[in-house]
Amino acid sequence: MWTEEKLDQLLTEPSPTLIDDIKKIKGDIMVLGAGGKMGPTLCILAKNAIQRAGISKRVIAVSRFTDPIAIKLLHEHQVEAISCDLLDTEKLRALPETDNIIFMAGRKFGTDGSEWQTWAMNATLPAFVAEKFKKSNFVVFSSGNLYPIVPLSSGGCTERDRPGPVGEYAMSCLARERAFEYAANHYGTNVFIYRLNFAVDLRYGVLYDMADKIMRGEPISVTTPCLNCIWQGSANEIAIRGLLHAASPAKIMNVTGPETVSVQKAARMLGEILGKEPLFEGEPGQDAYLNDSAEAMELFGYPAVSVKTLIRWQAQWLLCGGRALGKPTHFEERKGSY
Image (cartoon, rainbow, N blue to C red):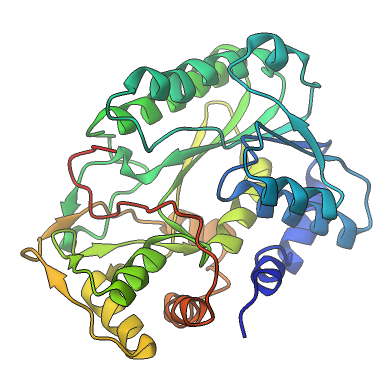
């Protein structure tokens, strides 16, 4: 039986490699934007790794904390939490200087019609943060959809490919990167830019979106025929360990699973476990947002959980009545409209 406690335990169990690496990270860790989908379990994972390593290091979670479940979880695991609207410049300036910062703050959904808010969060705020913490080590969360859509046969975009953002959300994400690249080149700030494609947590993600549609009898679009995804526990480990690889000029890395996942195949596997035949709509496309994560796999190792296991877990989660975050990925979106 799946429970939220079991899922959180899996997501926050540090690997031996993370425990070794956490000893090498000098100073405390502050996570800005820690109240989102990945932030709470990332903070707890870091805290657990520190405890297992037998060292003393603070983990400070900073967010507006609009989700009471997230703040409760952090408190239960003795993670320090600071409630702060990062766009309030006085409150931002009052945050403690910290050696290591994982920057997760951002805005995606609701961009259409409120583009100014997205640009404020994704472009203006990073410039303020980079100025305030110019002496810190940074891991900066970014998005894999900065790259253009590519043919399925391409193997996905590598870090050497030029960005080709479509839509204001992706454009603002590129602006975030450029703000931190400026700090890396101008101030000598060490920066690791983390281009993520679809973390899977079971409470949300591309596999949840497909499984939920199957259960509701709603069709799944195949116009985006393939995708990349990664177990969130492994994605969070890479974010923490990435602090050791921050550099000036900035280091850019694609973070996702090594597989190119067929939407139709994944849906059929989900449907088999769920006991419902998936429905599809649209004509299968010949291209998609795909990233090549070979560099991350070489540096950090392969994800702890395979896609096949994630598919099985995802179906079981729904059958057990697992909670949903209500944050669809819109993985099928191709025109950058969120």
